Each structure stands twice: as C-alpha cells, then as structure tokens.
Amino acid sequence: MENGHRCFGDGLPYLNLNDLKGKLIAVEGTDGVGRSTHIELLQEWLEVQGYGVVTTGWTRSTLMSKTIEAAKEGNILDRWSFSLLYATDFADRLEHQIIPALRSGFIVLADRYVYTAFARDWVRSGDRQWIRDAFGFALVPDLICYLRIDVDTLALRVIESKGMNYWESGMDLKLGADLFDSFKKYQSLLIEEFDKMAEEFGFEVIDARKSPEEIQDMLRAKIQPVLAHARHSGTPRSEPPPEQSTST
Amino acid sequence: MSTRPPTFEQPHSFPGKLIIVEGIDGSGKSTQLLLLQKWLEAKGFNVFFTEWNSSELVRETTRRAKKNKTLTPTTFSLLHATDFASRLYHEILPPLKAGMVVLADRYVYTAFARDGVRGVSRAWVRKLYNFAIRPDLAFYYKVPIDVAIDRLVGGTRAQLKYYEAGMDMGLSLDLSESFRLFQSRILTEYDKIVPEYDLLVMDATKDIETQQSEMRQLVSKALEQYRPKRGTHGKRTSMFWRRFAVPQPE
Image 1 (tube, rainbow over the protein chains, first blue to last red):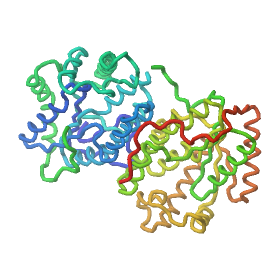
Image 2: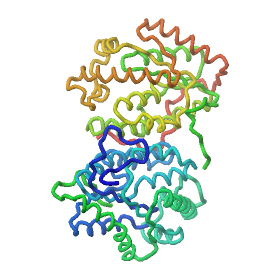
Image 3: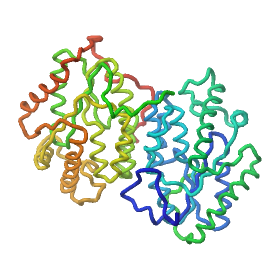
Image 4: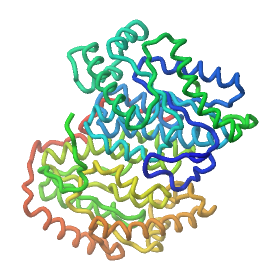
C-alpha cells in the first residue's frame, strides 16, 4: 500500500481515495483500558517530532454526538439502531475529519475504530456479517494497536477510577444480576471477540496491564516504522488541520 | 444472543400484513395509501400507518443536518437507515406480530433509489437494509416526471426542498431544474429496482378513483387468507413505546 488507502468492503465510490498521504492509526481496546491517556501522550510525542496530528474519538461527530447521548438515556435501542447510530457518527467523522486530514498529510489517531462496533454488535446479535457489511465504507487503518487487558484487572481499574456505567456494563443485555456481574460478563465477551479480531485483522497487541510508561514505549515502537514511511512520502505541516475534535 | 439470518430474503411469518407504496414525490402514492387506509378501517381492519423518515430517534438530527447542509451521501444514507431501524423495531414489528395491517409510505426501495443516485455503492445499501421485513405487497406508482412536477408546483406543496430537489448533488443551481434532473435519475433507478424486487407497477397518471379501485382489488386478493384480529375498539395511541428523550429544536 503506497499512498493509497482501501476500504473494508463496498467503499465510497463518489470519492477518490488514491491521494491520501497521511497515516491512519487506530487505538482499540475495551472501556477503561487507558486509550485516551495514551493517545494524548502520542500526540505530544508526534508533534514534538514535527508531525501534524489530528485525533478523532468515537461518538464525537458534530452530526451525531447529541443524538447518541439522547438515545443512550433511554434503554430500548434495538441492535440495528444501536449500531447504525455509531455507523452514522463514524461516517460523519470519516468524511469530514479523517479523509481531509489524511489528504493533507496528517497522522490521524483514532480513539476506537470500527472494531469496537464489530465487537459490540456481535455480542448483541451473534452475527458477524451484517455489521462488517454496514461499515464496508470504512478505511482500513495503516496500524491498529490493541490495548489488551484481562477482565479482572479491568474491573478493578474501572471501579477505582470512574466507576461502572450502564452501557459499559452491557446492562441492556441482561447478562448478570447486578452491575458488577454484568460488567464482567459483557467485557469478557468483548475481550474474547477482540482477541479473535486481533488475528483476523492483524492487530498489534499491547499488554495493557503493564505500567503506563511501558505501554507508551511499546506503542511508540509500533508506530515508528509506520511513520518512517510517511516521512518518506513527504509530510507537509503547512496546512491547518480540518475541524479537529477535542481529544478525549 | 441468537443468530438471525437476513430477513429481507424471505417472506415473513408474522400474522399481520405489510403493505407499502413507493414512487417519486408527486406520484400520488400517499393519496392512494390514505384512501386504502380509509377503506380498510371501514371494513373493520386494525390498521397501523408509518412513513419514511419520521422516527423520534433521528428526526431532529436529520432536520438539523439538512438545514446545515452537512450531509454526505453516506451519512444521508445511514441516517435514514437508522430511522428505518428504529421504526421497524417500534412501529412495524409490534403491529405485525399483533396481527395488524401495517401500511408504509415509502420503504427500503426509496433508500435503494435515492442513495444509488447520490453515488453510494448499490451493493452496500442493499446489504445495509437486509434486516428489513419483506412486504406482502409493494406498489410502485409510476409517473412521468412532467406530471409529477405539475402536481407539485400546482398543488399543495409549491415549495421544493433542498435535498428533495437533490441540490446537494450540484446538478443545477436552479431549484426546479435540479429537482427535474434529480427526480428523473430516481425514476431511472426505480425502473431497475422494480424487476429486481417484483414491485407492482401502478399507472399513476390515471384518475385517483380508478387507481384506488385497482389497488383495492389487489389488496383484497392479498388479504383473502388473512383473518383480522380485533383488540380494543377504543382509540389507540400512535406510538407503542417512547422511552428516550427527544432532542429539542435549537
């Protein structure tokens, strides 16, 4: 793959995706694993080196963020509306943030990517095909870093920090008697699916139980080779970033 | 966590019936569906009506996005799919399972036609909607573009809207010229969809009464084996559930 990026399935026939000079790096992992902290550190590290960086976060689109918040206040979202709301949010960010940034040669750091939607939809439906078809228009990232953690460590970490919430515990699925049981079952299913996808999509797996410093070093080691290629194809810094989201 | 095969590929097995109408703006399909509803209700059927792009979940978002003109072909398509999914779950499946007759003004074929013209992958949009319920009867009201424009301009809806006229596609700076070009392309797209999904083609240039009489004959035939179930005779609400907050207009 030179400068060209490709889509997962049926793409965006009305757009030319051959001139995307930048690099798309996705950071995946379940809730509370420390993705946003590491993305902030990565952005700092990259900018010091002179790379233009744009970050994009799940549900942060101008089009959909409010709608998703409103929908989550209720609890009768069906599987399709649930996944389609996120797909719409993603498409809005893809076309208004990610693609323009890549075209201008930026490094795009994505806090969560389509794999989050794949895992969540699979847990709710047991069907892998429909959600992959629905996200067929998504760009395949240049690198996917997966922060992997075991569910016991994760549960402790989440309780110690912000606490467990309804959606992160998959309470809509009625998997357990209380928030804790439900959280553990739901997150175990997600981790199991992420592990399968790690092979299917070639994730770079990073042990998220290590110290933040070690994790950051491992992330940088995975990202450096991808950048060398970006530098080679020229990474201008002159143009301002398009509609940058607040990093999360 | 059960595996569900795509439902759109086979007839449904619910006790109710799903009847839908398709056609471009100005084809008169909504008038025909309204008259059909009157007739079915007079006959004692329990009828539920649902229309394209009307779910509480995304209606306000769509309205706002259309105003700001920030929709791309893909987000336009996905927003309508979200609306459809929400209505399928809240407005179409419950009455079908309860044995009612569900009438839908526009169905997934509208998405296939419009999104295809806007330039998204035709294969993609079909896969996107493969969770839809296959209708028992699907009417397509076919009308030449000039007749449709005359009806719209001379009728109740004198103002053509930005997205309905396909202004986002940059076909023409003139609203009515853009409408003509965009809707003509949609007609061509429908011509491909009709044989693909065996839609029943109705001649929408005939008199309203003649069209309605033909429609009622076809519906009568389709409902021969159908045994209506009657619940309460009182007035029912138009909604089966509503438990999320609706985003308010800004």
